[in-house]
Length: 399
Image (cartoon, rainbow, N blue to C red; front, top):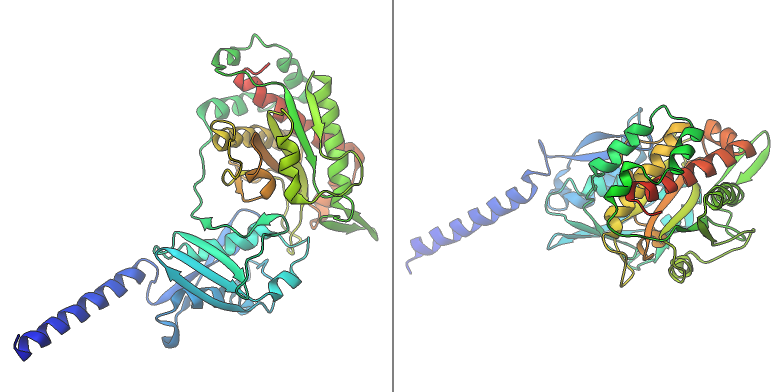
C-alpha cells in the first residue's frame, strides 16, 4: 500500500472515531452543556444546564455528577437532598453500564430524615440524560453496600419504566370520587357488584401489615412544640387502625409487629412470605431535608427478588398502589400525582405476594406532622389504607 493510501486510511479511521465519539454525546450535550436535575417538591423537578470545561470533555458523565453535587449549582426554586461535602470519586461507563463511586462520607452524613428516593431520582435522572447509559451501579470508595435507609443499593438502577394503571382500576377510582367512607363501606358489602364478573382467580382475604421500623430503629422524626415524634410510633398506630378495619370486614391480618420491637429489614420479606397472605402493605412516614415537601406517596416493587412470586405480581401491585393512593387522596393528606411510584425497597422486591409501601406524609413538614401526630387522624389514615386494600380485592372479585 502506498504512503498516500495509508495516510488516507488513517484519516478515514480517525474521522469515523471522531464521528462515533460525537454521536455518543450528541444526544447528551446541547451547546457543550450537561443538564442537571433538581427537585422542586416531592414529584416535580427542574433543570440547570452547565457548560462542560475542556478538561472534562471526555469525562462528561463524571463532570455532570460533580456539578450536581455542587450546591452552588442548585437553582433558587429548587433544593438538593444530597448531603453537603460529598465527593464524586469517579464515573465510568462500559457497555451501557455506569459505575458511580462516591465517598463513604455519604453514608456517614445520610440520616433517617434524608429522602433516599429523591437523592436517587436526582442522580439517575441526570445520568440517564446520557443515552449511552442504561443502568447505574453505585459504590462507596469502591465498595458496595446492601442498602441505605432500607433502599437497595447493591443492585443496578435501571431506566425506570412506569407501569400504567389499567382502565378498570382508573374507572373504579373515578367512581369513588365524592363518596364518603361509609358509602364506600356499604358498597364493599355488596359482592353482586359488576366487578365480580371480572374475577379470574380467587385469592384469600388475607393481608400482611408491616408497621415500619420499631425498637432501636425509630425511623424519621419531627418536632412540634418542643416534643419529638418518631415515625415508628405513628406507623404502629396507623397500622393498628388498618388491622381493625380489615378484621371488621372478615379479613385475616398478619402483623409484623404489634409493639415497639425491632426486625432487621432484610428479614421482613421472609416473614411475610412464610404466611399465606395475598397482599403485603408496609406503612411508613416520610421525611426530607426540605421542610416544604409534603404529601403521601405509594410505592410498588421495582423487581422480583423472590424465586416464585405471584403471577403478574408487579403489574398487579401497581393496581393495589393506585386504589390505596386514591383512598388516601379522598380523605387524608394530598397524594402526589395520579400514578404510584416504583420503589426499590427490599421489603417490596423480596415478597412473593402483591406488595406496596405507603408513605403517609412528611414528618419534616409542619402541616403533615401536626396532622399525623393526632390520634384521630392516625385512625383515619389507617382506615383509608384498609379501605383502599379492600377496594383492590373488590375490583378483582376476590371475596
